[in-house]
Length: 89
Image (cartoon, rainbow, N blue to C red):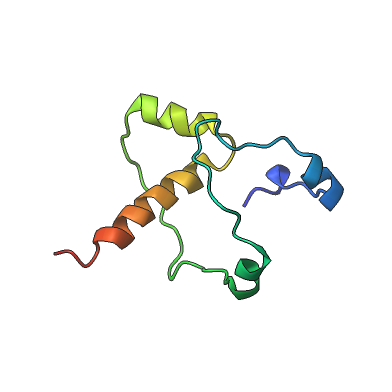
Protein backbone atom coordinates (compact mmCIF):
# COMPACT_ATOMS: atom_id res chain seq x y z
CA UNK A 1 0.00 0.00 0.00
CA UNK A 2 1.27 3.46 -0.85
CA UNK A 3 1.42 5.45 2.35
CA UNK A 4 1.17 8.79 0.55
CA UNK A 5 -2.59 8.15 0.16
CA UNK A 6 -3.11 7.47 3.85
CA UNK A 7 -4.22 10.33 6.04
CA UNK A 8 -5.26 10.56 9.66
CA UNK A 9 -8.46 12.36 10.61
CA UNK A 10 -10.10 13.08 13.90
CA UNK A 11 -13.66 11.93 14.54
CA UNK A 12 -14.69 15.60 14.38
CA UNK A 13 -13.18 15.93 10.89
CA UNK A 14 -14.90 12.75 9.78
CA UNK A 15 -18.27 13.94 11.07
CA UNK A 16 -17.82 17.24 9.19
CA UNK A 17 -16.84 15.51 5.93
CA UNK A 18 -19.00 15.91 2.86
CA UNK A 19 -21.67 13.24 2.48
CA UNK A 20 -20.66 11.10 -0.50
CA UNK A 21 -24.00 9.30 -0.79
CA UNK A 22 -25.28 9.30 -4.36
CA UNK A 23 -28.31 11.61 -4.81
CA UNK A 24 -30.28 8.74 -6.41
CA UNK A 25 -29.47 6.24 -3.63
CA UNK A 26 -32.63 4.59 -2.23
CA UNK A 27 -33.65 5.38 1.34
CA UNK A 28 -32.91 2.58 3.79
CA UNK A 29 -33.33 2.31 7.54
CA UNK A 30 -30.23 2.80 9.68
CA UNK A 31 -28.31 -0.34 10.60
CA UNK A 32 -28.32 0.78 14.21
CA UNK A 33 -25.69 0.35 16.92
CA UNK A 34 -26.49 -3.33 17.47
CA UNK A 35 -25.37 -4.18 13.95
CA UNK A 36 -21.81 -3.08 14.73
CA UNK A 37 -21.70 -5.14 17.93
CA UNK A 38 -21.92 -8.33 15.87
CA UNK A 39 -20.06 -7.15 12.74
CA UNK A 40 -16.87 -8.97 11.72
CA UNK A 41 -14.05 -7.89 9.46
CA UNK A 42 -13.83 -10.34 6.58
CA UNK A 43 -10.41 -10.80 5.02
CA UNK A 44 -10.02 -12.51 1.66
CA UNK A 45 -8.73 -16.06 1.83
CA UNK A 46 -5.91 -15.26 -0.56
CA UNK A 47 -4.04 -12.12 -1.60
CA UNK A 48 -5.19 -10.14 -4.60
CA UNK A 49 -3.62 -10.97 -7.93
CA UNK A 50 -2.56 -8.28 -10.37
CA UNK A 51 -3.87 -8.89 -13.89
CA UNK A 52 -4.49 -7.00 -17.10
CA UNK A 53 -8.14 -6.76 -18.06
CA UNK A 54 -9.98 -4.80 -20.75
CA UNK A 55 -13.09 -2.98 -19.56
CA UNK A 56 -15.48 -0.56 -21.25
CA UNK A 57 -14.07 2.97 -20.96
CA UNK A 58 -17.37 4.51 -19.83
CA UNK A 59 -17.68 1.99 -17.00
CA UNK A 60 -14.12 2.63 -15.77
CA UNK A 61 -14.70 6.40 -15.87
CA UNK A 62 -17.95 6.01 -13.92
CA UNK A 63 -16.18 4.07 -11.17
CA UNK A 64 -13.32 6.61 -11.11
CA UNK A 65 -15.80 9.47 -10.68
CA UNK A 66 -16.91 7.84 -7.43
CA UNK A 67 -13.50 8.77 -5.95
CA UNK A 68 -10.53 6.96 -4.50
CA UNK A 69 -10.87 3.22 -4.11
CA UNK A 70 -12.58 2.66 -7.44
CA UNK A 71 -10.65 -0.57 -8.07
CA UNK A 72 -11.71 -1.88 -4.67
CA UNK A 73 -15.34 -1.07 -5.52
CA UNK A 74 -15.00 -2.82 -8.88
CA UNK A 75 -13.60 -5.86 -7.07
CA UNK A 76 -16.53 -5.76 -4.62
CA UNK A 77 -19.01 -5.81 -7.52
CA UNK A 78 -17.26 -8.80 -9.07
CA UNK A 79 -17.10 -10.55 -5.69
CA UNK A 80 -20.83 -9.99 -5.17
CA UNK A 81 -21.59 -11.59 -8.53
CA UNK A 82 -19.21 -14.44 -7.79
CA UNK A 83 -20.78 -15.10 -4.38
CA UNK A 84 -24.27 -15.11 -5.92
CA UNK A 85 -23.42 -17.58 -8.70
CA UNK A 86 -20.44 -19.66 -7.57
CA UNK A 87 -22.60 -22.68 -6.69
CA UNK A 88 -25.01 -22.34 -9.63
CA UNK A 89 -23.25 -24.75 -11.98
